[in-house]
Length: 247
Image 1: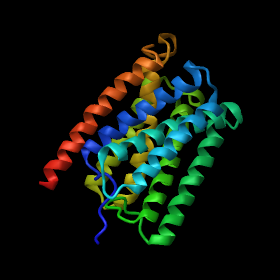
Image 2: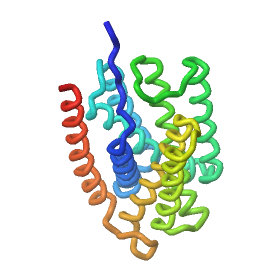
Image 3: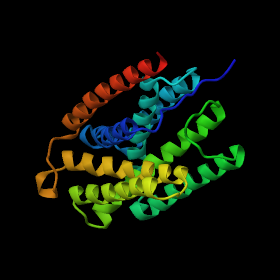
């Protein structure tokens, strides 16, 4: 029996959903650890359990289902927020060292992935073992993106809006490289995937932080609810597009 693809195709809708999911991960992670005052370790435990549940569900699925897939993406962005903040604020590693540690984890994962499968192509994926590497790489990518976004605001001293502009500029550069050069598309994908995370993170901070710190002061709960609503709409559109493709 032929195995079916398990992951999302890389389209404009994919990147839009990724950005909204990363914004949700930032605001929801902050809601758990800071607004509810549960602390970073408790936040990691809660989001890790959620991540493992939705990951198992995704791995057991026979084919790509947008709801299952994007729940795992949301879980990695939320868990990534907790991991980054825990490394910086609980372990006192700082965002610079934390970013280096997470970058090393991502590079190691991609190296082991390539060594085993001789390719880092992210679509289509039909093999469960390859999909496992895929999700571990995504978790490291989203954690790294969170740490880098916080580095821009807390270490480099950029405002949240300025940080979002910097990462948006990097993403735009990757898009231009995609269309104008012959640079390996897999490399460009992972660069874009990492930097859409800090873009979403800094935009999430822009929505939630006080006006005195350059934010809109919407609060983590309100910002999370808005992002959840947007994700529901986008997942519905993704399901509809998938149904049309099958027909």
